[in-house]
Image 1 (cartoon, rainbow, N blue to C red):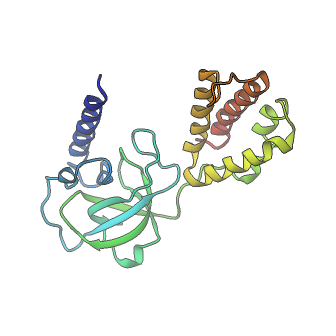
Image 2: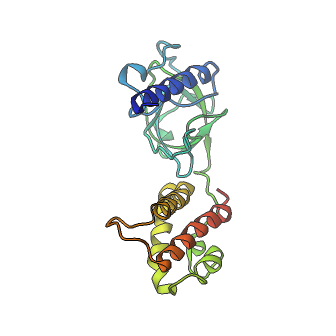
Image 3: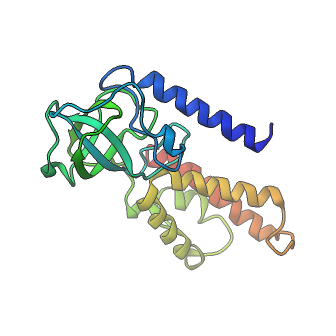
Length: 228
């Protein structure tokens, strides 16, 4: 299938999902982010106007709260004509976290960044939550001698000093996008090993292969450790 046809198919699928899941208040997804659909498709056709007891909520997805494609799409996300806990949202809601009151094809958990007058769009009902969900890992889990590190890095080539900076970068990545970062590590290393060579076309040495395998195995271990 040509890439242009594939893109068209994906867009049509997203559009259909949007139409199907916005038929009931409280279910479905927020408006697709602007980068996903052309401007003419960003406003849902099923509702015109917005009742005064609703508002337009702008939010960013919590780290690790994934889009239905399996990717983390930070946003901004728009709930164009929504209630919050059954009431009209106010400026006091900015900074709070919220969740869908029903299932979602988009992210499910968000931090509110703005509340504006309601406009035509998805007629939804969000609920406030104490905070963005956490997956259970801390910096202590991203150490050379703890848990997955002890299992996969200690036996691998190189000592702690050769792994500590890499682990620090992984902790930063996990803090930024949650479990998606661990999957990215698996994807990167799998692609590198499959190519068999570095960017200059030089084949990987056995030590490099062993270290890349350790990285991939560690990331898979951490997905379990962090309850991803």
